Length: 280
Image (cartoon, rainbow, N blue to C red; front, side, top):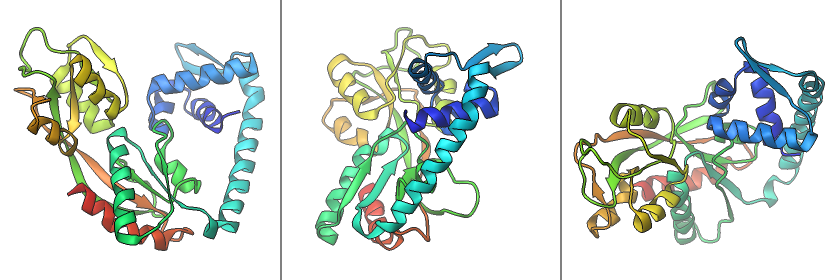
């Protein structure tokens, strides 16, 4: 049974809403629905009912809830204990919340090889899970995210914000009646606000959720998408992409977050300058 499925189940049970559970877990509502379907198929029962008052647990859901809470609690204790016991034997585990930072982690790996020698790194590209939750559960040692963590248990290292530009495979204007297909990457609150403001009422969104997939699609089939300036700049210079006339740039916060007292804190301090370097 997938741990993410149980966490999603409990988030819905707590919030009585698929939408609020998605916000709590920092994933899409579609991902929440997909996880619930998978869990219900595994168990061969319905876990929730939806009505005017919100989402409620079925009898089977009420039966599962204490078991799910106990399983996650035990798993956390086991993982934390093993993590402390074998802290000196595992690689530095780095993740990112948004797909626009996948290549950033690869660039950081190259920087670490060149500047620090052989530093073992494990890169995590699980964008459905909440990166801060993975950090607190010590499944990651360092993560790049747009979300400021609540509380004071984690340290935040502020990185240059990502400037997002609306780019298209062919020159076009935002006021054109027939715009290219918009590739929606779903990159957090600032991104969602820009999409609503600039593309409200436009039909033909394709939800990809991955920046590399969007670029590949655009280069082969056309379309338009909000992309980080650093990612779009080489393709713009080569003529493969053009900024959409009338599109408004915006920024997405970029934060490196880690546990100051974690077993990998000293190694994290070594790679933080690399993040600054590769984002310049």
